[in-house]
Amino acid sequence: MDVSQSEQPKNKTTVEIYNRSYTVIGEEDSRHVRMVASLVDQTMRDINEANPSLDTAKLAVLTAVNTMNDYLKLKEEYEDLMKDIEKLEKEDKNNHD
Amino acid sequence: MDVSQSEQPKNKTTVEIYNRSYTVIGEEDSRHVRMVASLVDQTMRDINEANPSLDTAKLAVLTAVNTMNDYLKLKEEYEDLMKDIEKLEKEDKNNHD
Image (cartoon, rainbow over all chains, first blue to last red):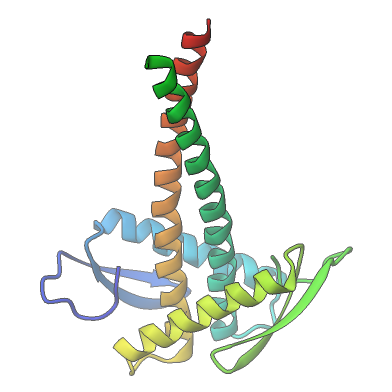
């Protein structure tokens, strides 16, 4: 997903996030882009509710920070799971040998 | 990770993202918070380089959109891996029975 022009854009979706329009160009289908946009919009509104004095730029940065934090946590869990699966596959292989 | 006041704040870390300061209060240690902040800052700078006309709020929203997209993709991969691991565990159990 990218906001810049691509040589072979596959999908172009316009979404509204926190009362502003964004055109997203990328491989993802419009339904997926709208879901992503709606989650970002909702997170901004949630952070705004807890911190009404923040301006839109700060709200958006903190939304990015929270999402990046969730992403890194999930990445760590994913890597742990990869290790588990490798171990199980090794055991499975040994049982079949 | 939250920007709002918590009753029992464990860590308070001040970070700089795109030339503005943010105080993050949460369970995560300061090193982790600084890494998250640095990734958000870098993503904003990358998007800015590709789209120099965007203002800070739009840059931050698009950073959140990109990160949310990465998060959802990883979540899908994580769920697929969970299914694989359940299958392997079942096979492993059958081999031990």
